Length: 226
Image: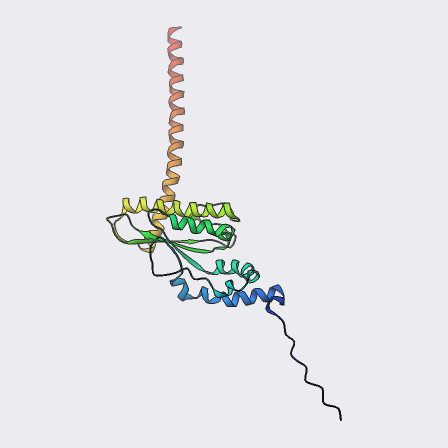
């Protein structure tokens, strides 16, 4: 009597042989814990000082080059990074420089640092980047991101916002700001920028009016002489 045929073995499929849609789903699930509420409170640190935190890179991104290439954009899009700036901004600029074109995937960036010397305390700016890669209006960056040069534009705008904050913070108040005051402060910065433009227009209009008056007086003097 012939031996019964062995049961069929389950079909095996290597991870990287799955369709791209399924692989993306796997990467998304593997990276989902990096977007948890806990991690949003303790985001990745890029710091000028010893903050006690290290930049955490998911293990799945270190498996092989193909997985890293496919999953890295998802990681940057879901993780929150904390950019802690000091006086030199050296580490902050070096980190943005190292991102290259990957900066266009970042969606949430917290910028923090000390208040002016002598005042004590610290500040945090919450920079949210839209799905289309445009920094929110608080940072006035109208250009679409994409690539190395654009990522540096984002860095410049973030650092510019920090500098504006330092100037306004030291001039207006000497205590930590509440969330409502953050909004008012940013609005004030925008209003001041608009006000500078209006002042220039007013000066031009006044100059034109003075020129017209001078021309009118010259005409009157000519008429009297005649």
